[in-house]
Structure formats: C-alpha cells, structure tokens
Image 1 (cartoon, protein in one colour):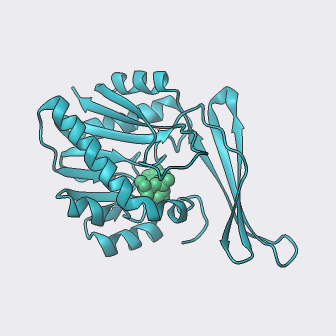
Image 2 (cartoon, protein in one colour):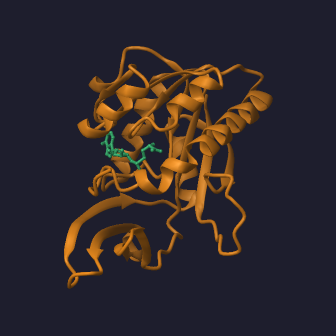
Length: 242
Ligand SMILES: C[S@@+](CC[C@H](N)C(=O)[O-])C[C@H]1O[C@@H](n2cnc3c(N)ncnc32)[C@H](O)[C@@H]1O
C-alpha cells in the first residue's frame, strides 16, 4: 500500500484483520447479552480497504462501508461491492437506512479539530442506528504516547514513525517517513495527520450528549499475540442508542 494520511495503517493492521473481526464478533456478542437484541447489519465507517469485511461476512454479518479515500475504496470493493466513497462528516454520504451496528474501527474518530464536529458525527451515527443499535468505537485515548518506531519493511528499507503531540490541546500530529538505508537518508514518503483525542471521561460525556448510553469501555482493540512489551493505550467503547 502507499504511504499517505489515508493508508498508513494498512501494512501494520492487515495481518491482524481476522483476529480483529473475531474480536468485533465477541464485542457484538457482549452487547447482545446485555441488551437482549440480535445484531446483524453493520455499517463500517470509515472502512479503509475493507480488510475486515471478508471475515465479518464469514461470521454471518451483512456489512456495508465507506471511506474518504478513493484508492482504499477501490480495494474494498474487490472484497465487498457494498462499499462507496464518502465523508463520514457529511450526512448526505450515508444511505437512507438504519443499521444494527455502526463500527468505527482502529483510530478512525477525530480527524477534525472541534468537539462540535465530534458531536455532529456521533449524532449522524445515532440517526443511522436502529433502536438499541450498537456503536463500536476503537481509538487511542489522549494518554497515548509514541516513541519513534523503526521497522524494516523490506531488506534495507526502513520506516520511521515520529509522533509530535501537543498535550495541552490533547491532539497529535504524526509524521511517517520511509528512508532507504543503503543510500544516504532519502525521504521516500512522508505524511502528517491531525487527530483529536479524548480521555475516557471526555468521550463518555460526548457519547451521552449525543444520545448514547455507554455500555462498556474496554482496553485495547485487538487480542494481541502475547508480547512482554505490550502497554495498551487503545480503548474500545460500546455504546447503545437510547
Ligand atoms: C486508521 S484508518 C482505519 C480504517 C479502517 N477502519 C480499518 O480498521 O482498517 C482511518 C481511515 O479513515 C479514513 N478517513 C479519514 N477521514 C475520513 C472522513 N472524513 N470520512 C471518511 N473516511 C475518512 C481514511 O481514509 C482511513 O482509511
């Protein structure tokens, strides 16, 4: 995949997609136990390249999704024809229907600057959920810290991720650079993205304001392969439409 503000996550997440889809299935099961409702239809927004769709379909869900990146939606359509290009902040880009579940997976909330915009997006989602519909948001909290990470992506080619955070405003900018070790340090690609992050208390308040009841907040967004260095700062919110 390319290296831009839309597709930076693909390489690191792709191989975990079946694990994450199974976890999502488990989270939906937990909500079913708590609400006594059965959930079948899912809107995955933003869906990225649709990496979760084949697995969620195998688990019996009807799934649709959209994403702002045309390139990623082209890939998603190969896996699921019910994907389209759209902006999650724009009510017009949603189909005129309601879903049992809205899935906002893997740090896909907060690509904007104000709480008003966060609230608007939550309200749009509420309008597209059935009664007692389930909203799943997996995202980083404002307590996340990144150390610069270096990863060899192919022989001699290194990817460096640098995080520039502004703790006061609870947001972060993330630059990602790919360099070739063999030559002198040549920047192959670089991107920056803006993310509005919330503490659990702030996010819970926003969800309640938008008309959701928070069912649970769980740590992490993946069943991880055991590793001594795991220090989770990702959380997953389960919230029900009142
Ligand atoms: C971290 S990725 C996660 C994608 C997907 N949920 C996954 O788990 O693979 C975030 C996605 O948000 C999309 N995106 C960013 N801003 C968006 C917007 N305003 N509306 C729709 N999609 C957006 C990007 O194109 C990217 O695919």
